Amino acid sequence: MKKSLRIYPQKTPLRGTIRVPGDKSISHRAIMLAALADGTSHIIDWLPAGDTLATLAIFRALGVSITAEEKNSQQWDLHIEGRGLHGLQRPSSPLDSRNSGTCMRLLTGIMAGQPFPSLLDGSEQLRKRPMSRIITPLAAMGAQITAENGRAPMQITPSPLHGTRYEMPMASGQVKSAILLAGLYAEGETAVYQPAPARDHTERMLSAMGIPITTADGWVTMGAGERHLSPFTLMVPGDISSAAFPLVAAAVVPHSQVSVEGVGYNETRTGLLDILDEMGAAFTVKNERVTGGEAAVDLTTVFSEMHSSDVGGGDTVVRAIDEFPIWAVAASQAAGRSQLSDAAELRVKEVDRISRLAGELRKLGLSMDEKPDGFAIDGPVRLHGAEVDSHDDHRLGMALAVAGLVANSPTTVHDAACIADSFPAFVDTMRDLGARMEWV
Ligand code: S3P
Image (cartoon, rainbow, N blue to C red; front, side):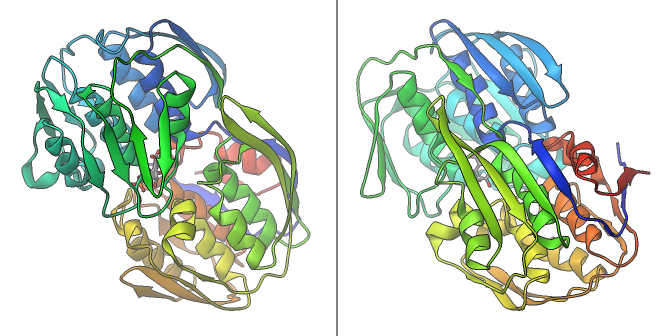
C-alpha cells in the first residue's frame, strides 16, 4: 500500500513524554533464539512491525508455536515454545523476509545448520541487497548456499558445519550474528573479528541463554562443545533508532521538550547521542536500569542552538549507522559545515541512503555534498515544503517527515507506509507531541 504523509510547518513547540516501540534488532533475535531454546520463552513488549512480523511468520512456518498477546499497535507479549537447536521443521514454501535484511541474514546462519533444504527470499528491495557478505563466511564453515550474483533468493542445501575464524571486512552486526548462529550448529570453536564494535545483542542473548561468548581484541568467540539454549524472559527496551526521530524533532523545533521513556541504551547503539552532545544539543539521560541484559534509560531533549560536527571513524559511525538520515536533518539546522565520512555502508541499506537522502533533501531546499562514503551539509538552512519520496525506506520516510516540521510550507512524503517496517505508530506518537501530520 502506497500511502502519503502530509506534514505541516510546526509553529508550536513539541512537548510531552512518550514511549517508542521495542527494539527491532532485539525483537528479531528474541524470536530466533527463543525458537531454538529447550522450553518456553516469554518476550514482553515485542515489536510488531513489518520487519519483525516477517521473522515471526517464518518461525511459525518452521513449526514453532508462538502465541501473541496484542497489547496495542506497538507492543505485543509473546510466548514462544522453543523446539531446541535441532527441532525446527522443514518449511513447505520459501521463507519470505519481506524488506528485512536482519531477518534474512540472521536466518541464513540458522538455516545453514538445518538437516533440510530451504529457500530464502524477500521483497524486490531486499533482492537487491548484498548477501555475499554472509555467503562467503558461511561457505567457509561448510554451508552450501547458492544465490545468483550474491543476491536473494538463496537456496540452502543441508551440509555439516565446522567452526571458523573469520575477519569481517566491515563492522556488521548482521554478518557477525549470522556466523555466530551458524556456529551453534558447527563442530568446534567459531570466532569473528570485527573492525569496530558492531551491535552485540546476539552475544548478550546467547550468553544469557547459557552459551558463553567472549570478546577480546576485536574477536568474538563462541567456544566448542555440546550446546543447549535455555529459555528466557525478556522485556524488550524501546528502540533508540526509533526514539531518534522524536528526539531530533525536539532538538530542531523551537522551544520543544520531549522525553522518551524506557529507551535501549546499549553502548554499541548510542552513537547519535554522542554526536548530538558534541553539536551542543541539550539532553538528559535518567533512570538507567537493566532489563534482560540490556540497559534502558529515559531520554529528554530540549530545543537547542546546535553547531556543526565532523563525524567519522569506524567506532562512532557503526554505533550510529541507522541514524544518519535523521542526523542529516539535525545537521541542516546546525550552524556550520557538518561532514560524515567512513559511512559507505549507508549505500547498501534498504536503499542507497547517501544518494536517496541527497536527492530528497535537495527537493526541500538543502543541497548536500555527496561523497563516496558520506556527505557534507552547510547549515542552518531554511527548508521549504515539497513533495518527497521515501523510496520504501522507513528511516528515510521518518527523517523527511521530521524535516517537514521545520520547512516553511507543507511537505508530502510519498510511499510512506514503509514507516511501519520499524515504527508503526510513528504518526500517532508525533501527533501526541503536538506535531501536525496526517495520512492523505
Ligand atoms: C542490524 C545491523 C545493522 C543495522 C540494521 C540492523 C542488526 O546492519 O543497520 O538496521 O539488527 O544486526 P549491518 O549489520 O549491515 O551494519
